[in-house]
Length: 391
Image 1 (cartoon, rainbow, N blue to C red):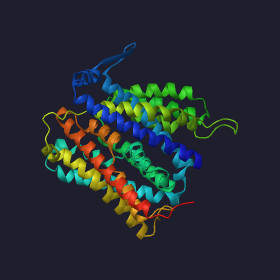
Image 2: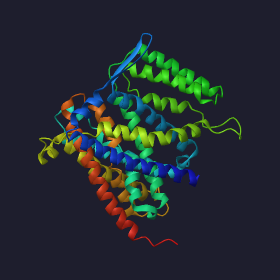
Image 3: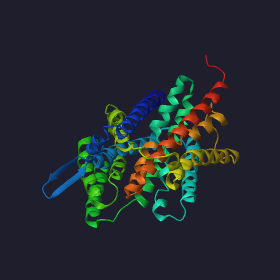
């Protein structure tokens, strides 16, 4: 189990570093003579048609609606495994990260809403600073090397998993467009078929993938965001193998997907969504209510919500600090959870149809995440310096 956890953390940390360079590359491209080519690339149309069913989208939406569905499939697999057979299967270990994630979503959302009161269009972005980018956060934490106890990394991962679960619920409930009931009905049929495959004990992945692809198309056409099809598909993948000699289908798929998501899908998403032109942008742009709400939500809201919820839970006796973790290290983790990046940009793209909010969204997410990364790593260094050297 410890070996699997270490491998997961290694992959996520490396992905965070690659994701950072992808974001920097996007910023350089959009603020150089390459900007027209960058925009043209993301606008390149691509069409797939099978009979009367046709999908015609620019490259940007194929990344956000298609490749990110695979990302959410992986997230769903991780959540199912952790709850059924991992760190979150022990109720005693669930309380603190669950409470932390709840506080870490509520406080940023409240701060953003307060900053943007009176603007209904801007208020649609209330969930943007509520998200945490686990890959980016672990990537930043990896800069401190082996001195960071694995308990701290596991706690950060657990908080992010609950955070992702909350984000999935938020997307499903609050960011759903006009519904096509016919497409939803067909998607419901696909869901029944997935459940039937699971109950019948089917462990081959191919049938699940074929039905899952049909489910994704139906969900995409229904008005519900297509990435949720990945989560639904993950719930149907069997965790248990038929016998001891057969590998777990869920674990096998998770291991196969993880490198592709970490090293290709997330960097592509970061490159496609982090580009923002700074031409004509002054420091005053940081005071735009959307930008300011995101920055304060990520940097202030996350640390207040997570640290405050943890402190209250421990003081009330319903949870305890992870072994080998003190309050200063926990506070540093709370700040690092303010690195929203991938999930914040993703939710922002769902929240704002008006391109006029794009620059404010991206500047807010980039600034809030950067401030959280710098402050979190600085405080974690102090916390680790106070620990006795091991060995």
